[in-house]
Image: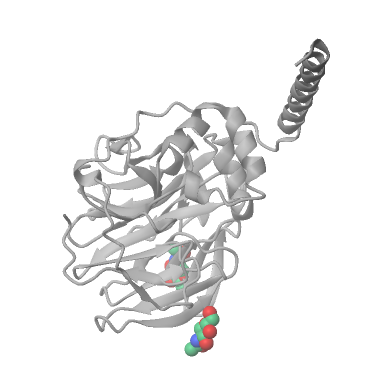
Length: 367
Ligand SMILES: *[C@@H]1O[C@H](CO)[C@@H](O)[C@H](O)[C@H]1NC(C)=O
Ligand SMILES: *[C@@H]1O[C@H](CO)[C@@H](O)[C@H](O)[C@H]1NC(C)=O
């Protein structure tokens, strides 16, 4: 190559560099999010209980086509059926009283995006419906209980449980984004979540905690002396004490889960079942650390589906009351399992990416 060729190449390289720098500046300037780096604990080793497995691989599909994007499960008092909220605004009731012959009932249309659900003392279904607020559903009647707390209107109320007195504990993933814009909140990765309490006497909601990282799920203990809530994007669940000298205090339940925790359901044997929407991996860790990568991924996400890279392998983990993980059911082919529970030896689960409920074989062992 002559001197002229070298100069020509150098000019091209310079032009390309300038163009990319300008494009990068434009990307940052026009990005809708204002993220900060997040420091995470090192990923837990994929061994022991968390060893990779395909245990949900041959789960049966129940109610194919009738349960689009089921998000949470609420089991009735007798354990004969459960409710799940679908992406089309319907609450479906799935009858499991005849083993291996489940029936799906179109229970009630509530509209919005029904997420977390829990049964109240009058057998009413309390529903977190994203930006529609907190609902009380009895038969065909849908009552809006509240739509704001602490002066901020709800954007994405999500996880919920109800005490025997009808006091409702619930979470708001983020006070900034509604369900349709939730990806912005995920990439921004800031603690905009809140833990809330609805009092049926005053008929209003108060704020218990702020600055949480996507708080999802509320699961009261059997004695109702504490409840568990999870912070999805920092892979941990905590205990909020309601009674005793620790009342009002928060302590660790389980940290550094292998994936993103979503809803939590307590079964009759005292195991807390946590849906894991995806496993944590190197892509996520890099995105947590480097905010510029998040701006870029957000832009790319309007063209291609990034879920398989950011959230591979969904599952359900079982945790004892003392915080020890005792079971992990997963499947690399599934994604966005938001809720699961083991009943009568079978594990039932729902996924935002499926249109049915999954059911494991009978007598499914924990290990
Ligand atoms: C329930 O809703 C589904 C649509 O989600 C519909 O196809 C089905 O016919 C409905 N079933 C009944 C019994 O109304
Ligand atoms: C929900 O509505 C039912 C029927 O009106 C009522 O008995 C119940 O107390 C309500 N629940 C809450 C938490 O407000």
